[in-house]
Length: 422
Image (cartoon, rainbow, N blue to C red; front, side, top):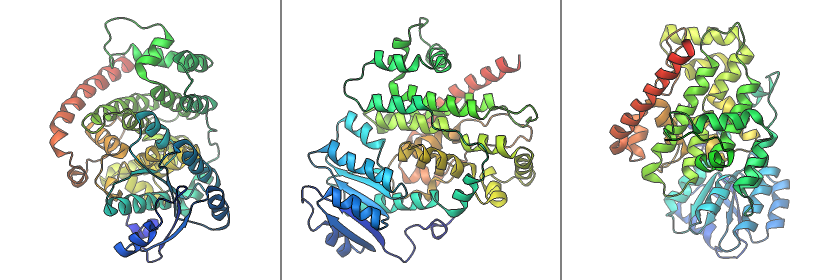
């Protein structure tokens, strides 16, 4: 898909940018970008309330908020933007943030640009965000999504956990109290922490301890994945691939994506988002299999016969891919924008702009290095590793070690398949 199809930065119309500068610290910022050669129309204001009113009356491609001293207040403005105009790209311009504040920001903003970034980095970040947002809201994606008969509602427990994460006074005991109200989730957490993935020397039966080991954001991700898997159960007539095995593979992708972040992240935010993206990459595939049934069976069969990637045949048949449908659902549920982007582009990472390592990078590489689940047509359902993308994000040096990690997960997947078939 080329950029013109998605309404990306190669179109001739200038990008309309609303720049909210509460401390009047960037008075000449817009003119500097114009001098750089950006095809942008920048409207600057130092009044957050006036900015929200402008948004209600005028469409902007992106909103940039400068947060120099009052992080919580400026992040609150972007939360209002998300509620008022969800199709508008949300960008935070800030000094370096603490790990806790960065995690909060990444749950709301599409991009966090740090003070001192070059003009090139700023331009790439803004235009990438606008391009992804436009692709997500393509008319065909919106119409296809609306045609689904039974869409899941957002799980209340996910949002309870999100609110708890954003509170400075929440303890592990508070999180456990939320999780205990969902016995299936509690059981899944204990099963996971005692599985071979952790290889602990003793059995963990205490939910508090299990949540501490996993991390609250991982627990939140498991709650979401479990909710979606429960909403899309495998029909008795469906024989192409096992929904349960797909769920097991998703956990492997998620765990490996988290490990891949090691050389790039000193904090937890990137790892948490990579885990969640890996866990949810193929939810659109389950949506299509559950909703389209025999129609989707024909798509899979055609892809196998013609030896074409599944997402290419999906676009031929439906005008939309499982990646786009899954990303649209997660965006509707207000998931972290970079998680949505990872789901959207995991088969086509070269569509991303910029050369930084993101949750998309981790999810794409993990998905590509792990084997596809077994299926009736022996069709590879995983992503194909983009060597050009790996080169662009300067990750080639780590590929040999990541392939060794993938071999370990491959063995676990085989063991899981053996147990399932026994």
